[in-house]
Image 1: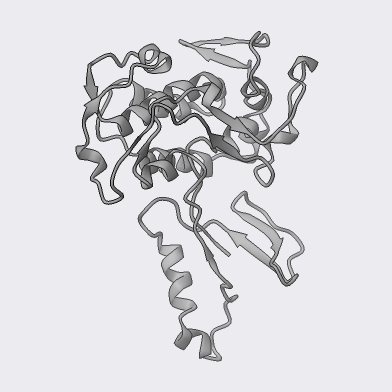
Image 2 (image 1 turned 135 degrees about the vertical axis):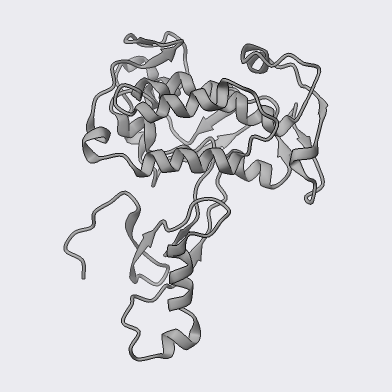
Length: 266
């Protein structure tokens, strides 16, 4: 019995037969963490049969490949038209009410999805992503991000444009989380065909994991970031991201659904 649960990496839950369980994130990225290796060793049949083993048993290992860019790229699909208009969430909200939509930031409820694969490219599942070069899809957001050469790696384009798009909504927390500015600058200051979705997500998760409760509760100075300036007024467009990324730092950092999710164990 646990009288309290602390930390953003642990969730109380029930399994299909009604047993109370704990779900805990123990590894991020393709390389297994030592914690995950320890769980696997302690829960091997011979270790579990030893009466001296007084560690909580692992019921199952759950791996989330994400509903985002990591998932698409692992399946060798390049979206090639990353834009806020092609990223949706399972929420209905009256955006003209003029206040933040806090409830749709709950990671246990909200789900992000990519739509519109008209410009997308699909490759054999065993294709080496790093070696793919093709004619660049000249979409509005790609050109807006400054990518104009005739040929490129479509997977690197996906990541670069996604980070370019997210910067506008997420970088408003930079006054409280200075690392977030470095994160965006390192990626956007120099385009690289070696960009990896899982590596970018892992970098972001490391920043997220290091945040203090005080930082997460801190208010943000505005809604939108643009070239070092933060707008404090509502965006006059019609898109739910306006409210999703407004308010406190926690709502900007809590869930990076458009990119993907991380492995966890239960």
